[in-house]
Every structure is written in structure tokens, then in C-alpha cells.
Amino acid sequence: MEAVGTAPIAARLAGTTRSAEDIEHHYRVELELADRLRSAPRDERLGLYGEVYDQLFQRVPNHPQLTRKVSEAERRAAVADRVSLLRRFIDPQTVFLEIGAGDGSLTLDVARHARKCYALDVSREILSGVQHPRVQTVLSDGCSVPVAANSVTLAYSFQVMEHIHPDDALEQLRNLFAVIAPEGSYVCVTPNRLNGPHDVSKFYDPVARGFHLKEYTAAELEALFRKVGFSKVEAYPRFRGRYVRMPLAVIKSFEWLFGLLPYSIRKRIGRKPIIQNMLQVSLRATK
Image (cartoon, rainbow, N blue to C red; front, top):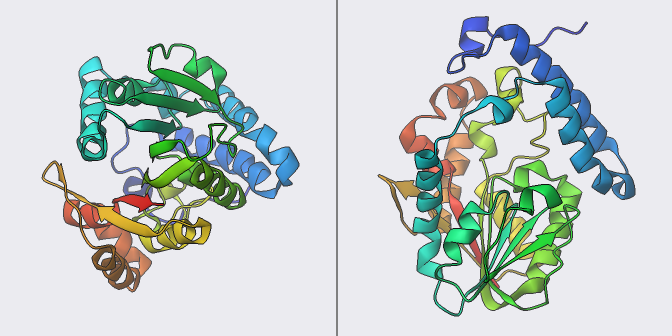
């Protein structure tokens, strides 16, 4: 069997309570399934997303997403933090779309302030509990955005982009651009490649190899956004609990300098708060 990981086991397991054996099992299963997604032809790949996640959770019963307990207070705090960024873009006429809405917690909160909301996900089951007179649930195959063209004034995704095959991500962006109204915008939050990887690969590899099919920098995301037609991209890093608008050129310059560092140094300092704040930014692309 191929050996995994070269760093001392204590260093690789820093910050986790899981055993080395459990993490290695998770790593091997996730890489096997992720490779299926990466290599599958497009017409097969769209049907695989749900299947491989089901298999992962069946074969890794102690996966953090299955065992992590989040209190109601923690859930409310997470929603409040995201709304603190989005609220400045919302008014009573807003039509909001959340991509990867999950249980709909965020969309339901936004619905208190917006005219209409769409909660989009690939799972019909997870959307079944989303009930609100101003919220419509939308089922997607991972690329499609089945909402009326030019109707959405604000779209949002949190930790979604990195889970999509790069080819599918570009197609989804094109589909998303089509449904956003003129002068509407898309706020995207995704882990930064430069202080990653952020999936189970982080214990063994310098780049994401698991279900984070591709991690991006802000510069790479800006290029994708402009490729599909967005005219302006802004950055909103978070400092001391507040999101502040910052010229994207500042973030890109920081990324360029940070990217010049050897991987070992980036790995060591990349999760320090000041570094994390400059890399883990929310990007707003305007049509």
C-alpha cells in the first residue's frame, strides 16, 4: 500500500481529536471517490455528485460532518455573521438566491428582509424542511440554475465552489450569470488555495486532492467571474468581526507576495488570523 504523509504524525494531527488511523482511512476513501469525479465524463459526472457523497458517509461513519454537534446558538451565530455581510446589499425589493442552501437557515433569515428568495441545492431531502411564504426551493444537478433569467438581484454561495469540478464550475457560473439581473451581484465565499488545502488532504498533501476538487485564489476567481461577463469584482475581508470593503488589487498583491513563500512557510503561518483574514475573503461580482 502506498504510504501517505511525510510529516511527523503529531504535526499532521495538530488541531484534531481523530486518530491517525481514522484520518488515513477517510483520506484514502475520499481520494478514491474524488478521483472518480475528476475523471468522469461530464454526462456521467453530474449524476455522480450525490452518489460519491453518499458512499463517503457510508464508508467513513466517523466523518466530521456526521459526528460534529453544532448547538442552536452556534448555528444562529454563523447565520448572523453571514447576514452581517449580505445585509448591506439587501432591501425590500431584493430577490435573493442561495446556491447550496442546505437546511435553508441563511435563506430563511434573509427572507425577513427581501421580497423573494430561492434556496437552491442538489438534495431534495435537505430542502424539504425549508418553509416560508417568500422562499421557493429549487433543485439543481450541480450546474443548472433553474430560475428565471435576469430575475435575481443578489446571489450567494458559501463553501460551494471548491466542491465543483472546474469544468462544471465555469458552466454553473455562466448559468448563474444568466439569472442575475442587470446590476445584480454574486457574493462568493470559498477557501483560498494559498493557505490550503482545506479538505482532508491537509493532513498529507500540499494541494487539495479530496472533495475540494479545486481551491482558488481571489485572483483566479476574479478571472472566472470576468470570463462569464461580470463587470466588477470587490473584496470584503473580515477584521475583528466586521466585513470591510477593500480594493481587490490589495488582496491580489498580498496573494502574490504570500505565494512567493515556500510551501513549508505558507503552511506554518497561513492560518494565523491576520493572514487568514487577507486570504479568506468574500468576493462580490457585479453584473
